[in-house]
Image (cartoon, rainbow, N blue to C red; front, top):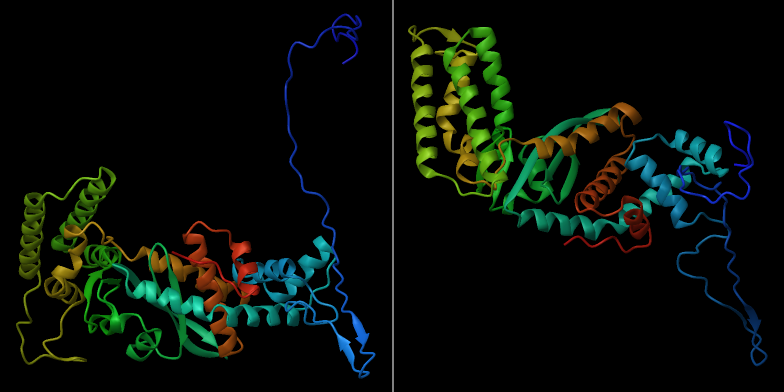
Length: 377
């Protein structure tokens, strides 16, 4: 500032009174750094043998990309689900690097192999956890219907792609058969046979209650939906205020639960025509009665969250962990090979786990490429 904007008087020798600051953040242009390794070659004067020095273990080819570039490509593919061809375009446009899909796939394969021990450790940690969420969803591999299974909590994630949906796949995952904690799930029958405590997803049940209320005008469904919301509000307050459960209040809530069940039985009596034949045999039940029977049979599993604050109200953790995998199918399409699906699931589980533990994803991928995945406590 050289002169006054009002009168034009010079300000050259006037002392600065204060500063108004503005900042601009930017990144420097990306420049490729090439590190050349030279292996000394010497001929033994005694026997004439030609001796070559050994290159570092990570330097395997005459020309190759370093771990930062490969990790960035794996990050784009397995965290943001960008297809291989678009990753190649991105690298060429932004960095001036022509990286082909085969190079990315080779790096993924190496990362997949290096994460085998990590995956086993995560399985063991989930197996000994107090609460684990379970869910499954359909996925396409080699054009055929497969299933993606997930077991997770707030610290660990494990995925398994499998051709089966039921016990065979659950056993192959290797967690539920030995699990002794609380398994949170949507009530699918194969989960219920395992010898552990179970907690049902009340968010699923509330959606079904809403359907019964809207389609069949049943009062018990409306009241049960409202009661579950009230129970959740009470347990949330206990967690936020770090106070213990009031078992007198819990008893009163349970009594209301039982009273609503009795009202439901009155609204949904057993079939008055014992000879009526349906697809499932005699005495076919309505959807409302089927849901009511689940509330009667699985009361303990439904209300487990009310008596144990470590148990969540719903199965949102597993649904969140599996939702991103479903998104991958929409963006990048189906998997061409079983090995490709397994590699993606293992790497995605690794990324999910290190994010849950507050670690940096890119650093974690670089560490995995170097054969030393990040340690999760």
